[in-house]
Image (cartoon, rainbow, N blue to C red):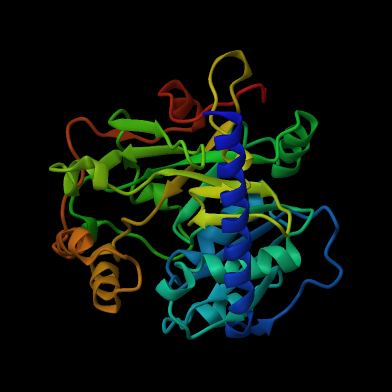
Length: 340
């Protein structure tokens, strides 16, 4: 690419970022404060952000897991839950809660709302942006807190850290597993796909596009290029001028997407254990299909949700049982980089 072409591409992306921020700012009136506990929060506290709807089954462990990692406060948007999620969150002393009845899809699948909170409360802080069915892991997480990791990232000049979303599933049918709120999902859905992943560097945003896993194998075998994207950038030292472009798969400015590297200077990467396939997955998929708030392309996802509602078996003879982060590193699914 010539210098002139590079300049023009950067100019267009800068205006795209500004449009995304303006769009999010316009949605700020859709959020209503239900519990604001931000006062007195330590200036170096690590924050976690999420939008949820009917996640009462996952929320107890989701909060406990990330508390143990070192998250100092959770900023959560409840999108019209009917299962008690909002009441549960309102009772948590380290959660600030907002609510909105507006359309999830119309808010770029919650990203517009989260951008408002990230700009208002995350500026200058390390922020972890997650879905309620994601559990963040990194090398040495069992003995080194998030603060140690973010200090090291800053010391080495890194502003962000990438993670692969790793789908977990049971051995039998999805609905046959046994799980109760507060339990470790790994006790119910400990299996994952170890090796069927492909990646492609996207030239426009310079982010890595990873696909594969059980969803590509079971639901998109005929056209795996249409399978869900698994690469994300969930951990960022936020600035109010930043913007997520597509969920947490990519950001602007695009330098923040440079979180996947190779060789001696390999960047540390983590894993997001994806607990979508807990026993309530068939029923939740039926609700999502009916609401039509979780997908843009109906032709693409109609069959996907129909298959999930049918309570499939994702396990195969090639499935691996989760052990620990060292296992994932050995399989090439995450990296400690220079973080030792």
